[in-house]
Image (cartoon, rainbow, N blue to C red; front, side, top):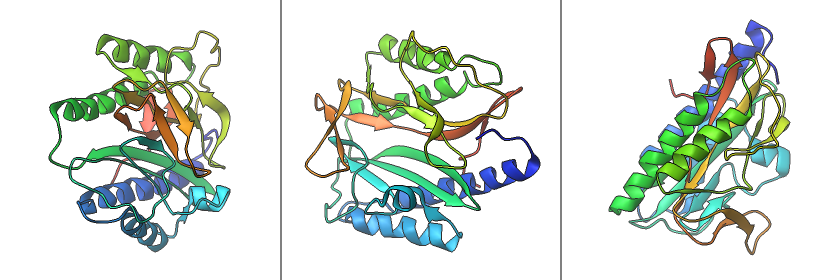
Length: 249
């Protein structure tokens, strides 16, 4: 999607606020003892109340309104009977559609008590996201995003999961430009045109470099097994830099 008029931007900002507000509410409700299905139901009700439809459910027939991944699960976790426990690291990924426009956001939340290493990982996962976002702007190289995040990860002793990429979004959940690396990619030659809409979502880890399939068709696990966080925003490339649309408000 390329934002070319005020109507496009208004629709994108509306669905962006909806997914951001839903993420914020789910994070506030997160507590030990609840199941991931119970947490997902909170998200479903908020999306429905706002007139939005779950992106993964609508597009891929995913068995849940949101993706909730715990500990060794790094992405696409199916909400179910798993009970969240103290010390868990929970990732919530929310994408949704309204008025024909999609937005996507996500974040990882530690359930206290947590180790200093996990606390630092979460802090630096957010930093990595914003380091990538600062590389966004009209006529700038897409490769700059992965280069900046990769330099940050290497400097601070982290790895990046290299088969879960950022992607274009807007009129569909996943669209061109596809496979935007959040790690250094020397083959990347594309340029961000003005108004381009896409996600930035690095997966920062204490050792994992890959996401591998599990026993179900959806859930992906860290390989090698290691604490991993994901933070994600939907952004528009403008002449003034990044316009992040997935902020609560």
